[in-house]
Amino acid sequence: MGIEIEADGRALRLSRRERALAQMEIHDLDILVLGRQANVRYISGAPQLWVVGTRPFGPICEFVRATGEIHLNSTWDEGIPEEIP
Image 1 (cartoon, one colour):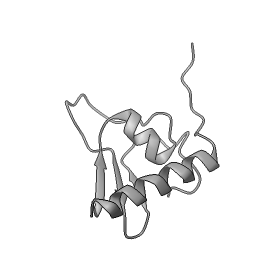
Image 2: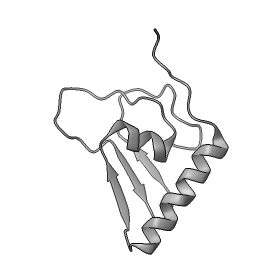
Image 3: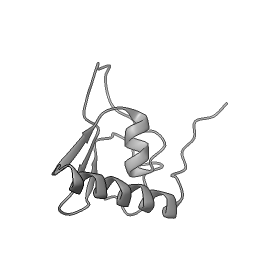
């Protein structure tokens, strides 16, 4: 069993982000700070982020409503969708 390193499809990634942005607008949220891998994958499409150290919680993804930018805090770039710097 290998580690999945491919990002989710582009159309799926974009539709998920649009849905999240719509909910952020409804609830007047400026930023989402995500730490659970499933939530990070929903927003970014990245299958697995590699982070250093053991932690009970660490924000590994920030999603900004005003710009739609996604910031991933990872030590590895493999599997990160091309539209995320």
